[in-house]
Image (cartoon, rainbow over all chains, first blue to last red; front, side, top):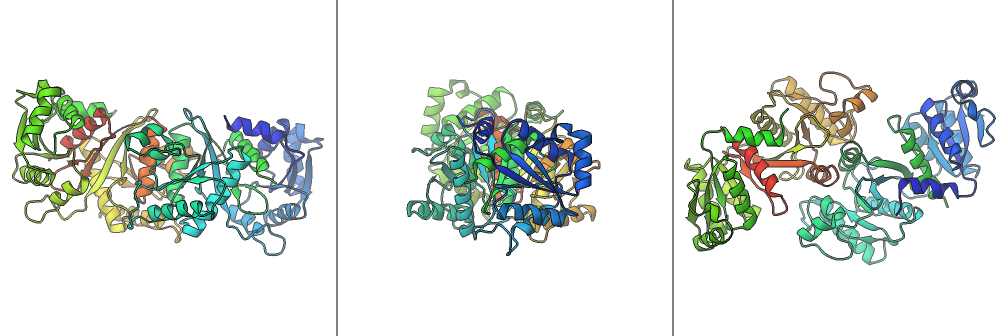
Length: 301
Length: 301
């Protein structure tokens, strides 16, 4: 069974991944860096004001002072830290980008920079991997954080990004459920018509590496018992690996509900750029940041 | 503390409520009727094909055969059962309408009938009351089942319907959280601008009997710790009683997530007609149907 802890073990087997951290002079960020090094999952290039960064490491993270897996790179401000860390990725020095203590918009602006940025032509999307008590598999949720109200084309790309993440985690042929409020196609409910289109795009080879089955309400997607009760049978019923939410509000609510009501654990990553991006927030635990790093490292080519 | 079981106790104190059940010849429906009578919370007028209904009662519910709190009324088909049960409400014989084994659209058509129906000019909306393990209060979720993509005016009415439900349950001044993906107003995200308008509608006395605070992400609405961590303070932070979802997909996902991942218990009712309507589905447990009945009975005038 794939668990979030097993992702850390897998990530530690990768050959020398390097993470570039924009604006790393932050207690929570350095705590995650320190644990990741202890677990042996990556080396880190830290970008920030050199004096502030060195002072913080000296005071609170003495274990990092002579750590060969850490290098410190001066950046006078957040904009500079963002552009230097992105450049470290585009020139091949680093394989993963991580957001430190700066605004998401600042780092994304550098990622999308036409000259040295990390664009691929794909859209960027958020993929979260949840370990939910009582569930025997990881549940991937997408997109709960980047795309506000994706149209069909965006949903197709969001699914492709999530499928490649699932593959990276060892889920070979993920079952993808475009979520809706009902299981039938209703022209008044766009999530149901989009789901129907996504199912056919999958059948026609426009979205590969997965089996798409929808529209499905959440219970039918995750519970074989609920699916059976509704008379929905087949190989995929109740067995979804990837839950595709119709909009950012539904995704955010599912994400928070899993965290706060169901005591789930989570790691998350932004996909669609040249490399995976770790965009954790201050409210995330060090454990969650570590899971996100493992997810990102496993997603590197 | 208000719990779903305490609602049953409260409902049993009401003076002789009568529930009209459309298409009652159904095992699950009669099981709920039987338990409700045993708990002393209501009398029932059952509408369906008389022979089928009597046969089913004779075979599987002998305790209801000579039960004075049950009356049987012949209706040749579902359309007739729907119209007769609605008429029983409109002529004052019953105080609550309950859906039995017929399509939701059939009973709603009778409810909305211009001649004998139960319209009030308000919109109909779904209000669910959840008891979530680890939470010290009922969480009302609206609208997870009736309104697909409510606009601002519809949201205002949805909130009014939920507030009166909360009042009926003894929650005197509920805190209402219009949910969104973020806590700031972003013109690109309608749930955030609608939330801002709802807050001001509350301040201006257009929505009364509650305190509205939003936009809020789910975690900030329900967790004081999460609110504090995000620097959101005040009397309402993390203390929402009523969670207003931006669309039916977000509501359905929250509903199912609470049921399947968080082991919550739920009762639900449709508000906005002349009387509360119980629209349970086959997948609901007998316990859940009982909670819904209690919620409906407490919501009667």
